[in-house]
Length: 256
Image 1 (cartoon, rainbow, N blue to C red):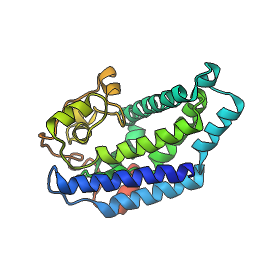
Image 2: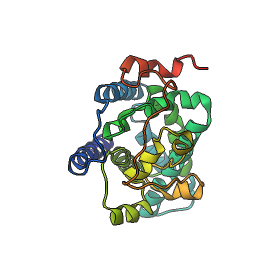
Image 3: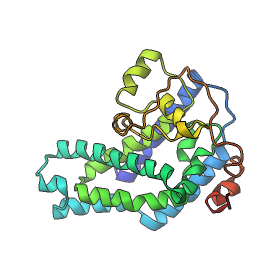
Image 4: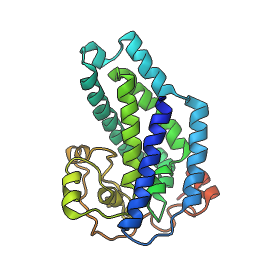
């Protein structure tokens, strides 16, 4: 199985599971912005494929062939190198996510994601092409510097994509399971807090796979499935979140 097929299968399975959970244990009744989210995703994934293709796999294969990177220098066995790759790339993603909230230019693109007023599994697809294209060089540099093995990168991308899909799910978890998972992983409730309309709350819980980066970075904000609060951005902070043209042009919209 090719890396692209493996990652796509993982994400598709997570989306299907998330949709099933939304039917079985819905957090609230929503009117999802399916057409906008899918449209934003289609533009982003097309431009990314044209610009970078399978660059992650190529860089990882190159580090294996050349012995470049920290893990190769340390002589790490494959299992350890794979685990370090998942941890290391998830940390890079956490830092990149924080940067997207901290720097106005990056926020212009990232707010397209946060503008969704009906957060559910398809929101995980709603990332502007500008954000996706600007994130890839950082990911490639991290893979090279780590000397990440190809297998480790494939596992990371598969787990990362699945986690991204599930944590956007509008479904509730049993309290005991939620507490246990939340001690290590980002749960839907934790990520839902990140989509709060309040800036002090959406500037928190930046993790995608692991929740401990937020605790270490002092950016954690507690939440459980019992929490109810408005999602999206304050009125007037973005264009029409239910309009695909408006969201594609959002980063270039004049703001005060």
